[in-house]
Length: 216
Image (cartoon, rainbow, N blue to C red; front, side):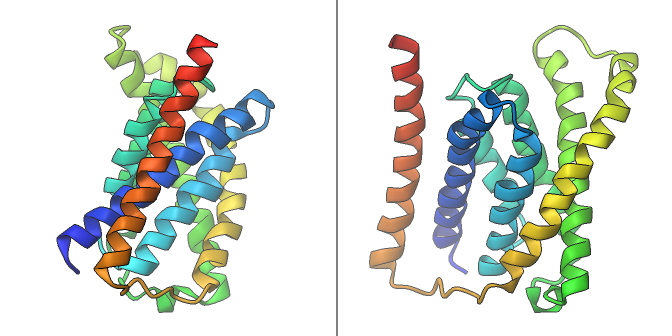
């Protein structure tokens, strides 16, 4: 696949991921719903699984996580936005590690039992791993300093919180894999304007929303 087409795919899917985290995630957080589990189980896993199915390229999910995490930094609402940005980037990396040895031919994962188990297992480790990474890096980046004993206190809570995300991922991943593979071999005259246009809209809405809230 052409590098430019892959980059455009990373940009648009990463922007959609970041947009969902900033807009939908903030609404869920303000509504006292389990925003983290829902965002990881539905949007993060859904988009990363879709990207692997459509593009069949390793490294793409990490790129998506970096784009989504960068966009999250432009929306300082809905809890600790720095924590969220770190978690998003970590989730992309952890997904890459877990799926690195999996064949790029996703057809073999479409068996119901296999797709459900992959969804549950991957989502659990992606969510828990991302959560733990934030507990380590956030205090380091904020100059507060990381202390292992502070992390150990929250480990039971983190492990338990991952169960809901895993259940949701056990539904999302099979649902995505069950869809027919979309044809992305469209003409460049349509592909690039569409991907760039959607990406720009996502960034514009998030930044505009931030400005409106700050100066309202």
